[in-house]
Length: 310
Image (tube, rainbow, N blue to C red):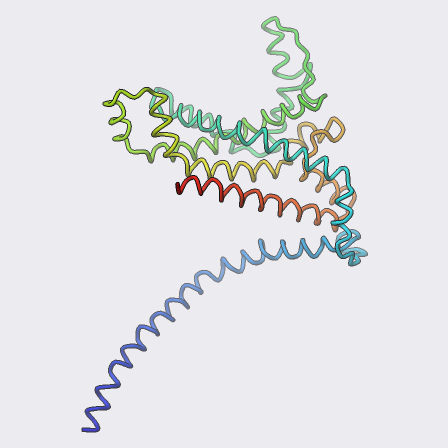
């Protein structure tokens, strides 16, 4: 009787241990595969953020005569006119570039999704500038927009229009030239995202709308745009972050001028870090930019995804 009781209670215990052992083995296998990525992620993403914050609490050149300054760099930032000027320039560029690049990207996606002749060529032509480096983009637009000897000025002169425009000589024209260069360079990426969203919309919806006699505008308003709401949220978020990181265009096309009228925050950080060699203050400004971008991106995500759920 005693032996039979022992056998009856021990078999379920073995059955319980086996799934537990399999689960532990699967966790260990997953951890083993994720370990290389986690090491690289921690080393190249998390560690620089921590190191940047610690550097922002110091003064002196990077690695030389560093002294702990507490929140001194952040206090100085509050009274730094150049910081507020460059921060305002960055916000201005975000406000003018994000809507224009998102809307034109959507219009281009609608055009190349119409299955007309030459669509493949148009898709390639629209996306090709995105593959260029910022140095090439800057050189191309300086070559085009030079006031008297640029490609645009000489082309207008050939057709009898003698008009000398100083594209880099004023606040308004400087920002317009930067916006044109950024639009030409990056709008192809937004077009691809919108195009992927358009191709996910079932044709049956448009066929039913045709039977009901819906116009092209009504089909866009009630089918296309609502179906693209999720993609639009992602595009707006990515474009906002990209606009906050503006640097190469201003550095190469206007050099932040005239004066500091087109100097964005990243350009100002570059000047502090690699012209004045003040790594502590540059890190403090960088950390504030990081927090500002994170905060605005979080708000955008909450608002846009809330509309998507509704």
